[in-house]
Image (cartoon, rainbow, N blue to C red; front, top):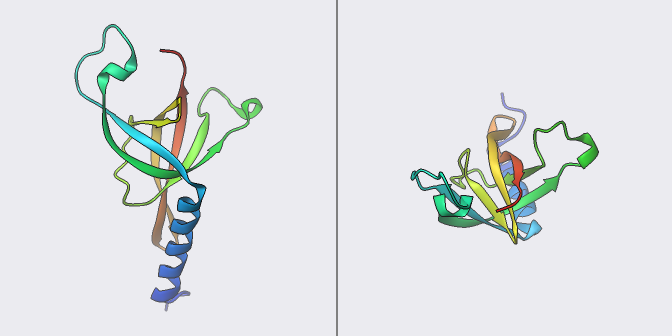
Length: 120
């Protein structure tokens, strides 16, 4: 016997979707193009794939141990991949990990760990 009905699980997934969409933060997804990048900026080796809405949480700088600068939540069917780059305004973040988040066995969203790309 499940603790939650199918309708309750669907409602929870919709609530998470609504929270992500309410953030209103648009990110352009750039994917490595496969060409070698020996010189020049990182932008030259990436191709625009799509845009999506994300919920972004920047990590406090004093708590960083050189690993991640932010986490983001995205819809579970987003198609985001490790090593994609998110361009948010003038800032860029490389996706380090993509982890599914579950609620009573139902995948509600994906959690991304991000490292900010500085320079170039």
